[in-house]
Amino acid sequence: MSASNEPSKSQLDRLGYRLRQETIGDDDLRLLDVFRYSYREPHDLVVDKIRELNIEPAVRLKTTSSIIAKLRREHVRLTQIQDIAGCRIVCLNVPTQDSVVARLEEVFDKTECDDRRTRPSHGYRAVHVIVWLDDKPVEIQVRTSLQHWWAELSEKFADLIDPAIKYGGGDLETLESLAIASEEIMKHEDHERQWDQIRAEVAHRSEMSDDIKRTLSDAEASLRRGRANLVKLMAGMANIPEE
Image (tube, rainbow, N blue to C red; front, side, top):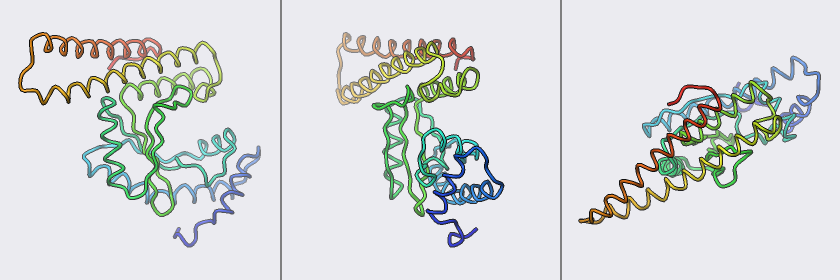
C-alpha cells in the first residue's frame, strides 16, 4: 500500500482505542497489519545501514498480539508506539556499547537516544536509539552481552512464571532476584568503563614500572572473574548453559 493510501493518524488512534476492547473485528486486524507493514521499508533501510557498519543486528517487526498487549498495558495511542519495527545489537561490553551508539547517531540524520542504563525499566538496562525515517520510528536496542543475558532471563521467567514479571509485577522472589542481578551487572559495567579509561591513559606511557604492570594485570583478571561470576549467577537462575 502506498503512503497516500495509508490510514491517517486519527484513523490509527481510533483503531488503537478499538484494539483495547475485548472484541476485535477482522477489519481492525487487517488495518493493523497495514499499519505494521508500512514500517517494513524504513526498517529494512535502517538494517541495511547498520550492516554497512559491519554490524549484524537481530531484526524484528512487532507482532499483532504484542501491539495489542502494549496498548492495553500502557494505554498509549497506537501512533505513539515507537517499537513497531526495530532490531537489536549485542556488544561485548559498555565501552563497545558506547562506541556503537555514537556511530549510530553519526550515520542517521534524525535520532533520539533513550539511555536505560542510568534509568532502568524494572531492572532492564540498554540503550535505545530511535531512528526516524519517513516520520516512522525504528528502534535499535543496543545491549551489552550481560544486559542481553539479563533481558533473556527476564523473558524466560515471564514465559514460565508470569508475564507481569517483565513489567515489575508477579512473583516477588523472582523480581528480587532479577533486581539483584541487574544491580550487580551495573556495578560490574561501571568498573569496565573505569578500566577502559585507565587503559587508554596508560597506553600513552612509554614506560611503566613492574608494580603498575602487576596492578593493571590484577585489575583485568578481577574484571574477568567478575564477568564469569555474573554469567554463572544468571545461568544458575535460569538453568541455562553458560556462554
